[in-house]
Length: 67
Image 1 (cartoon, rainbow, N blue to C red):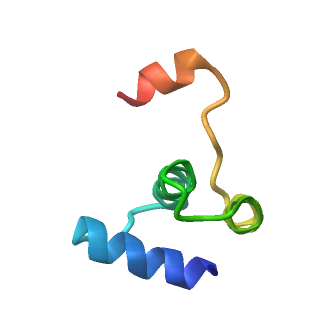
Image 2 (cartoon, rainbow, N blue to C red):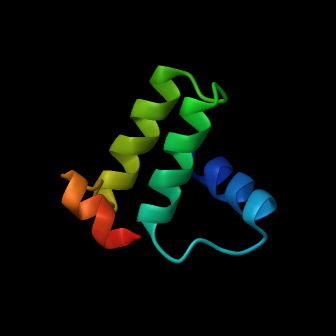
């Protein structure tokens, strides 16, 4: 899966455009955990999203701040 496919899948599932690359990163993680992406696809998407500025939460405290 390439980034554009991920974006289209996000839009079809969530019915809105992702506001930032971090949303796509979270969505890719969900797909991977549900077994809808292989580890290779997941890693490639994460690399591409990080190159575009997406950042994963670093700590549990960062995750709590998001919610």
